[in-house]
Image (cartoon, rainbow, N blue to C red):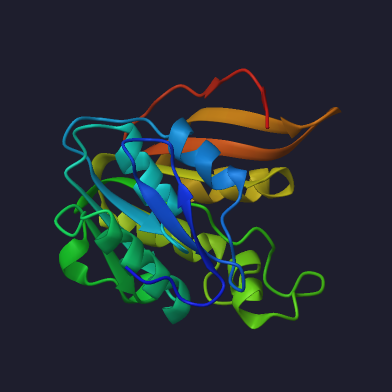
Length: 226
């Protein structure tokens, strides 16, 4: 495999798996790794990764959990999707992980009720809130330009099986938005964890998992430092 200009091959440190990263495009952060570690696992999981970027969340979740049947990654930006696809091919995972260069709003109705788990590291900033990054491809990853939090959660509800889980990370200032939207779309939050950074005791991030159409008591896990 020949890397393109500005690309590097980074080791996931699991089973020899590697991921292609482009220095000119949006690169994954530790938040994505925290999400894939936080998400619960059930043998035979059929997984969707919304806002997949270069594929880190779905790939890392697959690497961590033996027994995942399939991962479908959805990424709207062609350059990131191309990077993701070549990562799949490099690791010979074409029969397990699939990249779709498309907006999640266009996922086929045939996928309704099809997933046991949906993962999402979404854009953190609300649409039309504050300045956007001048680099268009980075702005799409960080701001609700191509998709909103409500669209993500409402589409997750349609695509999940009853009892399926939805798991995402988000900035703490969006906590009320996330929990209220999950309940609105019948995805009951049942696991929540806050994340701090360095010496700052105030959390900057939260991880949440909910289940479709099943009543569960909310458990708040011990805060972790990233």
